[in-house]
Image (cartoon, rainbow, N blue to C red):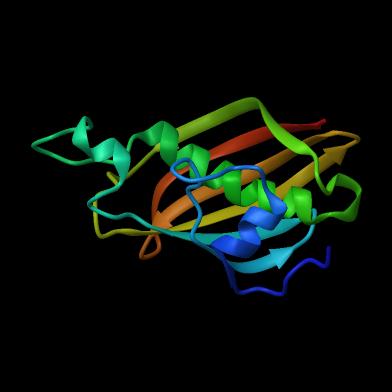
Length: 147
């Protein structure tokens, strides 16, 4: 498989990573340097499955799902690298996680992940989710790429 040229949407994303709806949290990849850096987007919709219970009178995207969205964008960069094609990315750590802004229906999340260290099957990436340039969440994510 040839890695698509950014920008590309969900169909191409699903060719690279194993996540599927309703758990696929990335709509588009706008920048990609395989194995190094990615910028993606997620349109937060009022009918997203988590809003029915989080919270019915004040819909807020759960912070853990914001971090998951960053990780999924990062997975696109990791699995776009030929050496990792077809593998599965597993969380191995989340460090320095901070939530700085509520994410609500109608927001468009920009998801960024830049890998600062890759050693064999372990990669560490600086992740950030933002809305209109304002940081919503950030964390250092560690991923293990396995079978």
